[in-house]
Image (cartoon, rainbow, N blue to C red; front, side, top):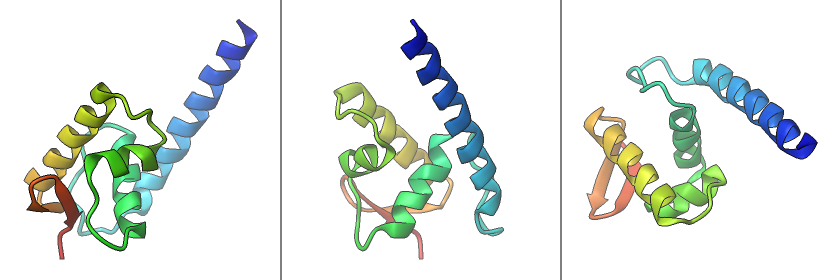
Length: 98
């Protein structure tokens, strides 16, 4: 039980940290949806040397490669394409919009 409580405390700290880092995004970035993964996804693309797939981003976020996690990440990537932040070069390959 104590281990679970400690894990929840760490998650709360991580969420606060990630949310605070969202303030450091460039000013020309449109408003991101309210979810702590979005700034982390953009950080993964900032460190990438080429296109990323949903599985790559899922790994960068530290999520298990379960279908529900990969599909959730893919949905977030598609949302960032709709917002004009990312582009989908070809099916499933996402990059930062230049």
